[in-house]
Length: 350
Image (cartoon, rainbow, N blue to C red):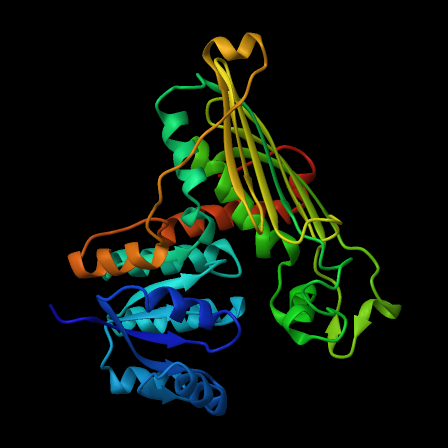
């Protein structure tokens, strides 16, 4: 069978991870890399032994000898580049968030569906076996009806230097600046923890009340060309379609946690907890007779396929896959609402 020919669009720090995952799949071949900085594209292609490199997406599309693209461009570039790829009849796996706002994300989802092209947004924590096992057990009714959800995404890089000095490194500074296309911690990792919780319980929020906070971090709230105006901490109080309540929050000031996700789901017959950290992931359950003794048991989750492998499978089979652009748009709708005045009350997700 001919290999699926893939273009890497955007050759910054995250692109190497896409190459690493794709190289594990013998059904795929990375045939080209493209970046607005041709020199960077050339260096990336040479490092990863990629045959072709381009300094513009238009040039790669004119060449055309690829079937699908990994869109690893900055957030604000996702929309125009993805729409160009879809117009060229190319399947697309796009980094999260899908777009800067719901309107653009909705257009991307509609365009992909109209063109009948395989589309996926790279919500990387779908690759965590424990979250998939938790979803299966909740869907089976093992903990009864969901009544309450707690979910948190903890980062500490505004306090710790474990990932480098954010005050001098543009790799981090752009994430603190709305001018540079950032929606802050809400857009960067809030989308992950929202999907982590909603995917596990099989429901999206129907109402949301949100608070966002930007803290002083430098004199004049600016470092060089970067105004530090994006939110640093975000909290959401939500209600799901079955009436269950949830608290979802994320911050870059959670000292002691470099990159940590935690989810607790409480039901009428038991509860589940998933803890995903840098070094270890755990899943534990309290259900059945154990609810009377408050006894928890660890659960080993079977391995799952990565987003990249499922994307390749879907393209080869010409079938849809999740998380799709539509899922990315639905998540963006909630995040957009969090940034409106209505979210100071309990705003309905319409």
